Each structure stands twice: as structure tokens, then as C-alpha cells.
Length: 368
Ligand code: NAD
Image 1 (cartoon, helix red, strand yellow):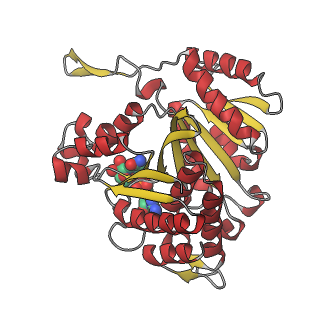
Image 2 (cartoon, protein in one colour; image 1 turned 30 degrees about the vertical axis):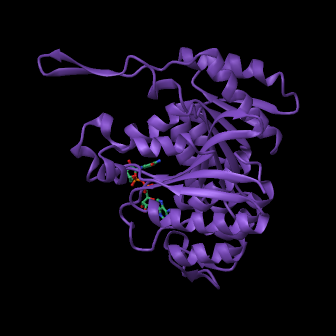
């Protein structure tokens, strides 16, 4: 029997609530599809600081190194974050650190609006066409978030100067372009590469390299779009997009904009992939949203993004495609049966039933 090790880091806010449901669903899928999962939980974020004095405790990092994949919740609490130095705060000290540590250079965020949730999409129905189905592929370890120098200088006279540096090398662009073209081949075979080649040196190089890599994928139609136009087109005609390829910061912004089209942040999973060894890819899987402190601990959070992240983990890291598809089908079945957490509930929907985190998780587990 195949056996895999998962590090489950729930984090803060709604993290523990949605992680509990995802673990339950993973166990049901493993049982049904005949593989063994060793799921070990460990603290991260404020939970890590409270337990061991660091957002990424040494024992948690050691567990991750000893695992085949990481299932992550989310970290950070807006009322506590400002009380400690910037570099010790959960998002920098845990999330960015893990991305660097495991070389997680490719972030995949699928955005799918199910037809029954058309009312939860902020766009008018006629702009939704036959359905929105976009995959955002974001470069995750380069660009402005990591480039050096990165500092705030004192200029004297009460003035300061903040510096961030945008840097990309050819190999960094090549490897993320390959990920995006390969993903497009498995979808509708269209790739829109986002840049700002009219203003940025980085944009010119990005466009040149993506165009060159595209020659290896003649079955994929490649188009280039400036990021400002891309942001607008996502609102005007999202159905034109299949795969969107973005550098780090543009992808951060556009993936959240695209996420809004999916109806609720609580619907959207993501995968951050590192190197592939043999047929296993080390990956880090997390919901698109944050810790949602406004609804934490109230059984109000939607666990679907966490559960779909677990499905992506089974597919991308372990190749357990049937189990992943079964989880995705179970989510669709639970939604089609009328289960709605508060964020996607509409009193106008016939047969809609308002449920909490636990009830939604139970409905999905039962459907596996
Ligand atoms: P957020 O995503 O936590 O919340 C934004 C809105 O979406 C809130 O109204 C929230 O209730 C709702 N929402 C989010 N997830 C939901 C779910 N599963 N079900 C139902 N509703 C959901 O973003 P924020 O308020 O900007 O950030 C809160 C904290 O989370 C901050 O400390 C931020 O730094 C952190 N954060 C962490 C990550 C991460 O760990 N990857 C990502 C984003 C934000």
C-alpha cells in the first residue's frame, strides 16, 4: 500500500477549524482509495510563537523537512502582528521563510465559479458566460518581494527613503513559464502572460523569455498583456482567460482579483510547488484567504478552500488523481445539495441550507 507523510500546519484564526475538516476529508479519501497517510500537526504563526517563541518553530520546520508535502492553514493576526518586529511576524517569518526554504517557485491558483453559485460572483450574470474557469500561475520566489537591496534609509531632516528591488533572471522566468505552458496543455491550451514591458526592464526580459519558451509548446496559444489591462479585462471579460502567467507581485494582486470572481475567498485552494524528484513534487498547499479573525472560532468559516487544497496536494504531489477528483466531486455534491456557509448563502436560493464549518465538512466527507 502506498504511504505518504503530510505536515499539517493549521496556523491562526480560522486555520484550526478548516484544517480539522480537511484532515477528516483526507482520511476518508485515503480509506476509500487504499493508501496510507501519516498526517502530523504542528504549530505555526502566532500558534508557533505562543508554543515555542517563533512563528516557524524549529520542530515544525524539521517536521516539514521530513514530510512529502505541507498542508498549511493561514497565519497572522492583525491585532498582534504590529506588536513584534516586522521580520518576526508570521507572514514573513513563517510563510515567506517556508517558500524560500523549500524553493517553492510556482504558485497555482485555480478559480472556478460553479454555475449554482453564480449569485455569489460580483459580476453581472452576462459577464460570466458559460462559467469562469481560470488558473493563475504566479512566480513565487523572485521579483520585488525578495530582490535586494530592500531597506528603509534615514535621509536626515525627518525624511526616509524606502527601497524595494525588482529582479528576475532568465532561468527563473524559464522554469515558471514551463509550469504554466504544461498546465495550459492540460486545460484549454491558452496562455496569457502578464507583464509591464512598456515600462519595466523586467517586463521586457519576461516577455522575451516567455515567447522563446512558448516555441516548445506549439499547441498552446500565447498572448501577452500589460498588467493594468489584465486587471481590467478580468472584470470586463474573465471568460477570455484560461491560464494567466504572472511574476510575483502582479500575480499576488491579480490572483486575489480573480479570486473574487469565484464568489468567496473560502472557495479557493492553491498549490506552491518546488522541485520534482522521480514522480513526487514537493508542494505546499493552502487556501487563498487569510486567517479571517472576524469569523474565527464561530463555526462560520467555509472549509472548502482548505479541503480543495488537500485535493490539489493529492494530485500534484502524490499523483493520487482519483482521490483528488473524488474530493472535488464531493465538494460539488455538497454545494449542489444546498449546503451554504454564510459567505455564499442567499435567502433567494430555493433549497439553500445555511450550515457551519463542521456541517459543511461533514457533508463533504459523507459524499466521498
Ligand atoms: P482574510 O482572507 O483573512 O479575510 C478577508 C475576508 O474574507 C474576511 O471578511 C473573511 O471573513 C473572509 N474569509 C476569508 N476566508 C474565509 C473563509 N474560509 N470562509 C468564509 N469567509 C472567509 O484577509 P485579511 O482580513 O486581509 O487578513 C487577516 C489576517 O490574515 C492578516 O493578519 C493577514 O496578514 C493574514 N493573511 C494570511 C495569509 C496566509 O497565511 N497565507 C493570507 C492572507 C492574509
